[in-house]
Image (tube, rainbow, N blue to C red; front, side, top):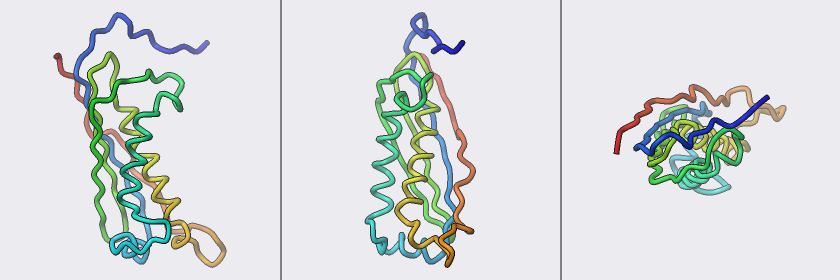
Length: 146
């Protein structure tokens, strides 16, 4: 048997969570991102929007997550020599936590990065020997009484 947890007896509190993850890319691909030379467009802007959409739709993809009234989403993207890292912070006043929403935002944003730059990451056989999504994790989870 499977079931969604009943949160009807819980009271609303301020919930905050941040998650982070990175994608390892070729240095040439990172240069394209930094200089705005990716055929599909602005990787940073699009990935930030994708993260926000993923946060808002988490409950549609994970069957045991409750729909949550999201109060705020913040995305931060860092560009390093051979990796791009994304951190997503989510805030809500609700009966259940927002860490799954933050994780979903990071995961889908990183997949979006891969999709936007895959043309530059393939080797001569059409494979991705260098590209790797890694270290997706919850950085912080906070619950505060209102």
